[in-house]
Length: 294
Ligand code: NAP
Image (cartoon, rainbow, N blue to C red; front, side, top):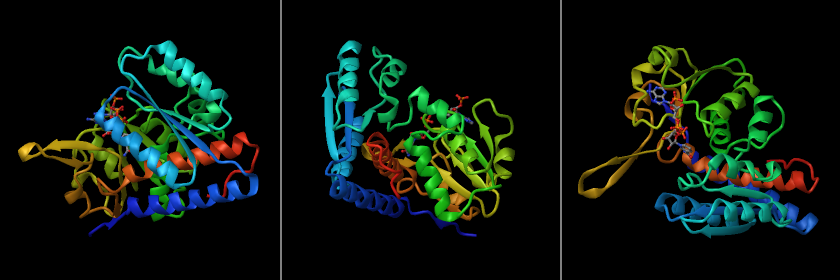
């Protein structure tokens, strides 16, 4: 069997276009724009690339984009003061603090200072708790993207056996909750799980969010399963070059799976598109408008 390749690039482009359409409608009907503020502390090159891409895609979707670059040695008080200002700013509907933060800053306190209504990364304990309780919440963008990709293959995930490998607050745990909301039967695995290959062999839906290059092998995959690879690992190559690979051994798994996401070109593409979707949803909720039809 050769798997269908799930085209994250095309699905993300379609989602961005639908968000842009709704933004244009909000602007036309209500004469205001959803706005996203991104806060970057320090000069980490990978974070700078992500922030530039978020800025461009936000503007391309027709939203207002605000960028705040703070020095590496900014004090926690100054960062919290900026967040408090953005919480009050009526032109800002989404606030994202780019992670990871420098070590002297307390990530939990910083994320906890964001108004949950503007927490478009879905990491505030209030949103995490609401999601865990099955209530409406802003959900983290990468897991949201995983669900959209899965539903591009299966109209419904109801009753399917899913395994999520990884239990981080950013990916694994919220993905578990989103899958439960879709009525999937979910197993969550982590570094202490026993006999991972056997657990994976039972799953119709496999989500790998580990951060270990090509850890999930082809002979772990149930024939016909859908494989969503969240991992982004940079492998050193010759002449100082690097190659991006996922957490799944793509060449092997694509011979067995029914559908699979590539790396790059899979989940990574969805994360920013879902950030735009969350910003639009947050803006409509703050303005008291109905949930956008995206
Ligand atoms: P993380 O916080 O480091 O969490 C990794 C998880 O994997 C942990 O729960 C860990 O278990 C588990 N794990 C480690 N070794 C394992 C093993 N041998 N068997 C089973 N589970 C194991 O990482 P993360 O932030 O969730 O990110 C995971 C991957 O996704 C990374 O490659 C990251 O770059 C990528 N990512 C991609 C996007 C995107 O937009 N595509 C977004 C976010 C992250 P314990 O809890 O027991 O330690």
